[in-house]
Image 1 (tube, one colour):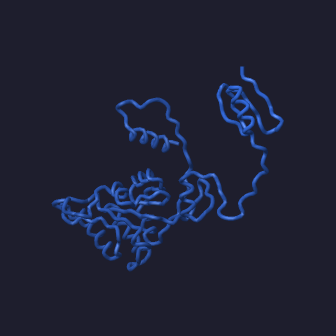
Image 2 (tube, rainbow, N blue to C red; image 1 turned 30 degrees about the vertical axis):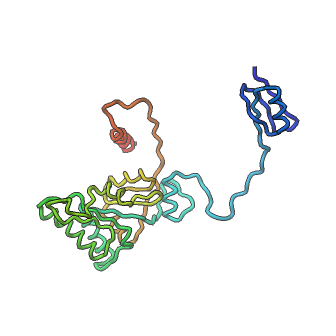
Image 3 (cartoon, helix red, strand yellow; image 1 turned 90 degrees about the vertical axis):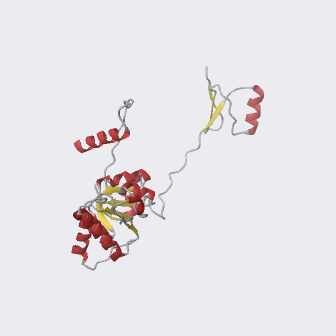
Length: 261
């Protein structure tokens, strides 16, 4: 049966548990090794005075990854769920579906000759209305092309040869895949896009979400947006997934549960 003894030092407890471990005292270690005893000593540190709060640097608060990212982007030391804060955007993505509308809002609200806030932080990817002879669909891409030439947008993944996609060296395919493959998804940054699936970029350790044309037009001109700090939800999943279900089925069910809350 295990026995316990307390040494003369009030902060050291010796407890026999059937295993061998070295002690803090060399003499004590040698003594117990000679006796062949299997004893583990647990050393209890003396009580320490409470450390005063730091007087320099940012004050530390317990926050989730999302809160930390938004706090950095809003130049705040602490954020709480439900707060509305102005967030500096690192990347804005739009495509041929919402791009023309976003550009129209920029020009209406900031002026016809307005310049984007940062030509290297805007990513424009035609990927919906392509490889078609529909003139209206092609017109959407034409508007993007003209705008990118006017603004000298650095990351415009254009498509010109509608007959053979392999003849387009800048064509990158689906915008969400292209964002990751071309290095636009970076941990700790804020990425906004005119597509509901933009949130998939959160897999890269960044805050990413979809926004509408109006918000995107404002971001395009100002480089920031008023966002509400989201709450944190925890889902505990118990059991095994049936073979006919995949991870996407699981997250879609979680999404339905969130919408019903």
